[in-house]
Amino acid sequence: MTVDPGLGGLGIATWSAGLWGDYNASYQTCLVLHFAKDCKTYEDRITSMATVFDRLVRGLDLNKVVFEFPEHYESAGGRVTAESGSLVKLAVLTGTLVGVLIKQDRVPVIEFVTPTTWKGQVRKELMQDRLKTKISDTMLYDLEHRASHAWDAVGIGVKLQEDYADAARKG
Image (cartoon, rainbow, N blue to C red; front, side, top):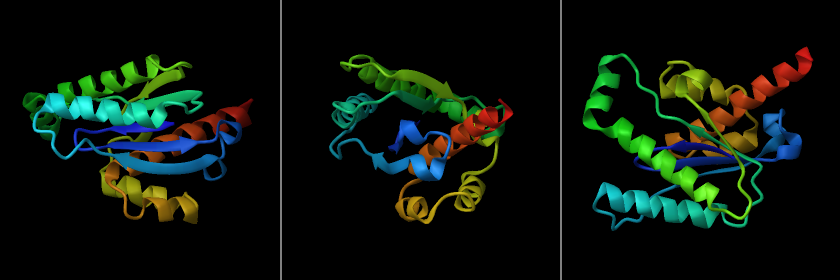
């Protein structure tokens, strides 16, 4: 499972571990989870998202879950994000979701990847355009009407599997 946490939604992509390394074959589905509509505060949203995530992962046989981990950028936008507190809120959300996983009966391997590690510093639109040239029609169909968090969750999985396949070829 690859996860792109966001304050407005949570992008998730699931993959078959047995086919890992071939992202078109291992892809299962992607979705975006949202907090309950009646949430008024940040705390309510975090609690709601943790509850929804728990319902999703409970009973799944997850080997590994990779989260995009918040990263500070030394740019005007990065400073605004940091000053607004959004980066800290995103880190708290990510930690809360990890807390959900470690309470499961079978705890998966948990890893983190920064945005710079998997996509560099390209804009979302460019990353999505690059992804469209790589993925199967099934994946593209699933992503067509999804929020950017789903695109990022799939993008993370594609990048990790490309790296895995490259390492396997090199021996």
